Each structure stands twice: as structure tokens, then as C-alpha cells.
Image (cartoon, rainbow, N blue to C red; front, side, top):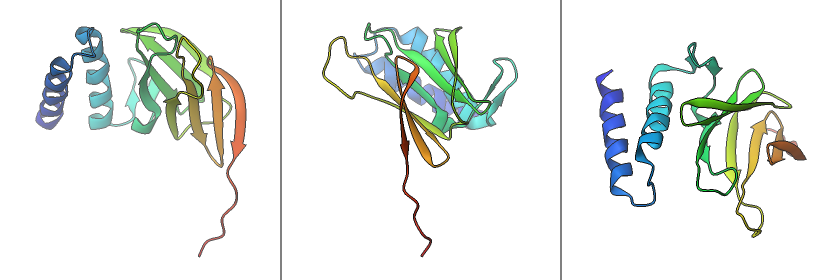
Length: 142
């Protein structure tokens, strides 16, 4: 327990020192949840979340400066939190093993696409809807 609190304190100190995070209290709640999840396992029965740490990310989904917590649940759900409230929940095509928000164009406002790794596929979601499916080529073991 003490190690988790030390990591949490160090991350919060780092966020306070950075000027690009004006809403520190919201981020503190996010970071505490992520550190707790990484430190204590992949299940949180209160939030009804069963996810790996590689499936937890922050992203500015609407390009409005409001960052949201994205969690790809092992039950094929993508959950979006704004602050401490669950904002939305979306169905995924497969159970995710990792997610990554990224910018695929220069359009304004800057809204990221979401890459979801699942099995032998990478699914691209735009506006939290399925957009593209990339199948990884088979590689023979050497």
C-alpha cells in the first residue's frame, strides 16, 4: 500500500509542476484510479471495471480541452469517464489488449482516433465508432 501512495504522490507532484494541466483536481482523480488499478490488479468491483493497465488512457476526445479517461474493459466495452462520472459506454468488436489515442489528420478541432489492439487485429475508431479494421499479417515462428 505504501508503494502505491508514494507513486501517487510523485505523479501528483509532477502534474502540479506542469503548466499544461490546469485542472489538477480532475487529473488527480484519474491518476489515483490508474495507479490504484495498476497497483492492485485489474478489477474494480465498485466501478464495474475489469481491464489491464494497457487499456487505460487519457484523451481529449472532442478537442475542447476536456480530457476524459478511456478504459477498454475485458468484457468488450469502452467506458468513457469525465471527472468521476461515467459519461458513456460503447461496445467493442473484440476484447481489447491495449488502446492508443492518436491524431490521424490535421483537421480542426483536433480530435483523436482510437486504436484498439485485439487478437490479430487493430481496430480504428473515429468519434468512438468503428472506422477501420487492420489485420496483422501471420508470422511463422522461428
